Image 1 (tube, each protein chain N blue to C red):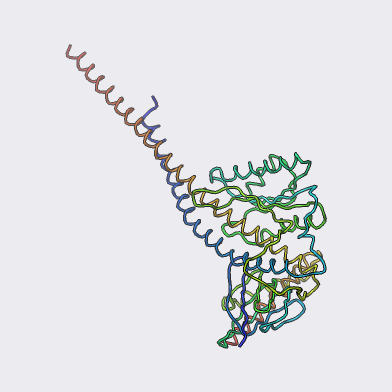
Image 2 (spheres, chains in turn cyan, orange):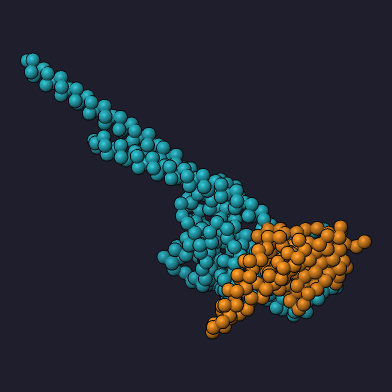
Length: 290
Length: 138
């Protein structure tokens, strides 16, 4: 049996760990709220831009933008949003499993996959695994900003315009509740038609475009896609914090259990030592008087 | 009197929503004014300020760093790239940003750097003008 002192040290170090995990749990819990507010704040933009796109699909432009046209799939692009840091349970692993499943599915159809990665964890994972990574963005911090994402999105949009990829997907974790998150796949390109009910516009009209329509639509649809990716990043951040809170809570609980067990072992060891001492004294006294 | 619904939003939040008599915005091809029953219009915006004339006669200013504008006869939607409330504008910071952009313009060879610096300069100038105007009003 290990010595009393060793056990005492072990208990102390587990207690320190417990302090850290419980602090992380509390930090994550407070950040979830902020992340949810950010998600809420991104909603008006998404709604308005959807409304404009629905108007756009009712207009009668001379040209249809390539972003709106479905074509035969020979190569696809996936934007994967992961977290920057670990210690958030199975969140990233579940997402990557889904991504790998998706890649395998496309490969079966002889379709190659290009990846754009957001978040340091995805970068690490696919560096080891391999895969055709065309762009990365990481270290977004607590408040992801559209600015940080534009680069990777642009790579994919350009690839689409040049005909290098024929479809673009977004994969990230969906925030269902603080207890539950699940990986989600969204199609970004081609942009599917949106119609908002209960809104009727006059027939046979078109916008006045300033400057020329093609360029404007490109800018416009890029912004639509950026806003979706931005929302994905914000949502994923909320998921990260929720998963971290749960993971840290169970780590704190586990540390508590280990401390209890160690305490028991420590008490037994101390008792054994005392018993041994007493029996030695008694034995010694008996030898002297005998 | 006819009014027009104005929604100004950026990816990071809603900025303004309400009825107005008239809206002015810095379109790419030049400043435009939009009255109710304007023809449908889609245009890009450059850095500058959006002015909303409220129905009670009050003016609201919003500084935007660029974006898109959609007009339907009874609806104006401004999709701002990043927009801050006018009263949050910090004149000193705007000047510093302008200085920095101007410094960056000197002795840059790379074309993309130059393009970026030009954009930053235009933005800083617009910010500064907006701040000046706000200062005058107070």
